[in-house]
Image 1 (spheres, rainbow, N blue to C red):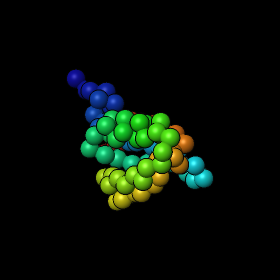
Image 2: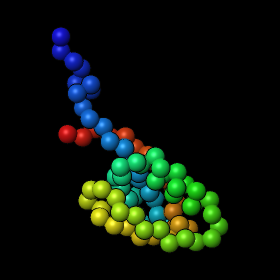
Image 3: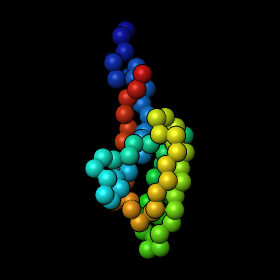
Length: 81
C-alpha cells in the first residue's frame, strides 16, 4: 500500500520574529524552538530593555537585538527535504 505524500515529508519548526522598524521578519531555526519562543515572549512582556543574543541553526549564524524592539513572534511548522 502506498503512503500518502504528507506522511513522507519531514517538518521543522521555525521561530519567526517581527522587529520594529524592519520590513521583513527574521526566520530562525533552533533545536528547541518552543523554549526559545517562550523565552522571547517573556522578554517582550518586560518593560526594561534587555540585549538578546542568539545563535540559530541555518542561514542566520548569530543575531543580536534589544527585547523592546520585538513587535511580534510566531512559531511556524514547515515541510523540508
